[in-house]
Amino acid sequence: MVEATERSRGSYRCPVCGHHDMAAVPAGRETTRIQCSHCGTELELTLTAPDAESFSVNVGERPASA
Ligand SMILES: [Zn+2]
Image (cartoon, rainbow, N blue to C red; front, side, top):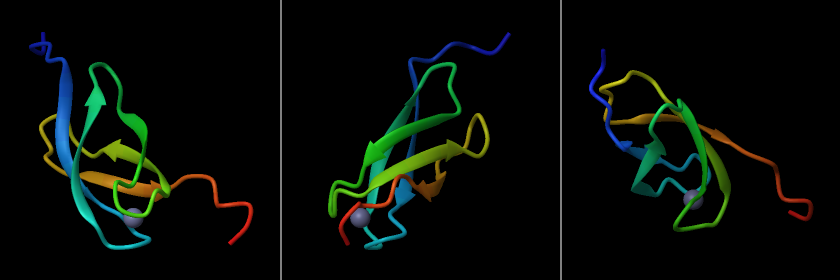
């Protein structure tokens, strides 16, 4: 069995503003939604591997008013 950890931590890069920051995905999940700590864009982070230290990032819902 895989040792259970509370969260998988890693870094992400916001595709909108290019900001780098840390985030964590809850245990047992592969994706989580956050807001960029710099520009506030909603981002969906996907864990690329169980022991990865980086996430692939997709922009969530687009702002209704751009
Ligand atoms: Zn951003």
